[in-house]
Amino acid sequence: MEQNVVDYKLIFEKEGVYLHTNAKRSNHDTTIPGFIRIVERAGLPALEWSPVEEEGRSAPAVLYTKKDGEGGVEDTNFDPGYEPDWAVVSNVKKDRDPVPAKDSGQWSFSLPLSELYSLRRARFSLGRNFLVLTSRGGHPLPALHFHRGGTRELFRALQRYIVLDQSPVDGRLFLAYPHDPGALSQSFEKLQLFDDGGADLVSRFIQDPYATTFGGFSKVTNFFKAALRPPGSPGHFRTAQDPSLPHQCDEEPDFELINCGVELGPRPDVSRGQPLDKWHQFMDPEGRVQDSEKIKEIIFKGGVSPALRKEVWKFLLGFYPWNSTFKEREDILRLKTDEYFRMKVQWKSVSEEQEMRNSLLRGYRSLIERDVNRTDRHNTFFSGNDNPGLALLHDVLMTYCMYNFDLGYVQGMSDLLSPLLFVTQNEVESFWCLTGFMELLHQNFEESQEAMKKQLLQLSILLKALDPELCDFLDSQDSGSLCFCFRWLLIWFKREFSFEDILTMWEVIWSGLPCDNFHLLIACSILESQRGELIGSDHDFNTILKHINELTMKLDLQGVLRGAEAIHLQLTQCKVRPRGGRRVSVFRRLRG
Image (cartoon, rainbow, N blue to C red; front, side):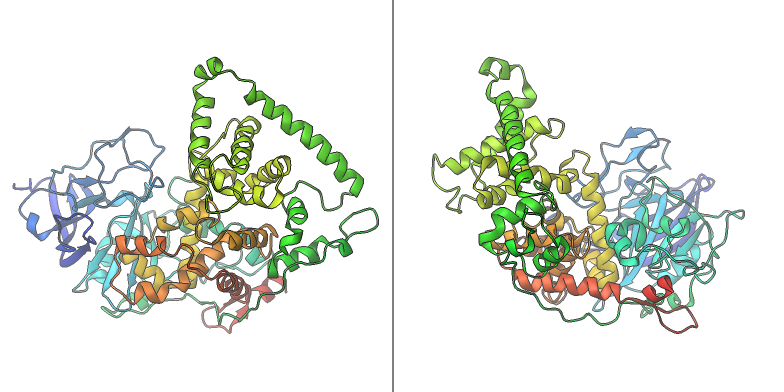
């Protein structure tokens, strides 16, 4: 079909740009050759890709439009050409007439340049250059593999319409902005990152890498926040920069990977310690814990002796305050026992007839009964039929629905409760330990899944900083979203380690050391432990997912914890090298 010469103008074209489909659809080749183009349609520039086999047909079928939250009707026919990453992919909205396009297959796409949010330019060590593009709706497009080079020429052509702003930390990431002569021009050299003191770098980084990682490991300005905030998020800020591309990216096909002056340095060796095996020596005569920070340090390095877990966990999870006396703890237990059974009576007293008119409670009960019957049945505390442990598991979860009816019960919560019930061997104490645990994790179970999306993004940012090659490989196989880590983060690795190992892992994390989000460093440690298996093989999207799932019960807990702690120490010792200057410790600059 011929294009209307008035409405259509070809600006740039490059052949030899492939999609690697990973054979996720049996009727497609694993690599599809095609063309990348910049075109103007009715005066609106767009970036388009279409396979060679579709040449002569009209423009691509997949249109990316405005980001969520700006109104419009949901596009129910949206197909990005690959399976969405669980339930963490947002909907695509339409709020205006799209540029002219016809249906031409599953893999083609057309992205108006006004909707281009970022480009990540990378080169897998054993492969060719590829680009990962993300729309302002937050949707990554399939990676574009440039078998014959051409990324530099594409960038130059794009600069006719948009500003490509290089991230100050990840030299391969470029944010796309419209040309705005009135916008403030800021470059990395002009930003005075270390002029003032500030909060501890790594504590901010671990507490919220979402707003800190691309902040030059120090003061985070709005300019850098734009590199981290997803499109449409609060505080999203646009700015412009000198449109010229950095000279490091000029050479094809072996362009240099840029570190932008951030040097993580060597990762230190760490060792684990012995578990906490003395308890009462830390108490005064009235029962107050004298040095809770010392106790947490011991727990972080070695966990808790099994004989002490029943008592220590109640402090770690907030059932008892660290400074409470023996008498005060007796009073707390009495009050909490009364409160628990008052809530339990609420659901126990609901008749079958009443429950028939309460679909929410009926739904909670159905989910709980189904999950209880398949939770840790290999453990003797929950094995067999008519096991009293199963009845306690059921009753505590039903009572939690009364305690937090807005959240109620969500699949996975039974996995959190079973170790608590196993250790405490007590219905009331396990319930209140669960409420303390859920204070840490309740956002994971909210219907919006915003907390899970944020953690997956944080994990991706950490991995990019720690192991760019592994990150590039995962990107090249459409696995850069790390959706296969969803279960890890949801229930804190409960199904990845043995029952005994998870008791140790959780108490280590509950210590709150060395940072609030230590579980993200644990995830990085696991991923890095698998880099040789992943990169050194022919894994694709499906086999990566299969490999990660098959790690269950095969991971070395102590090795993973050592790796996570070493990552933290490596970050705390990170040095920044100002361009043209000597290396300076980030902490020394901030503190001095």
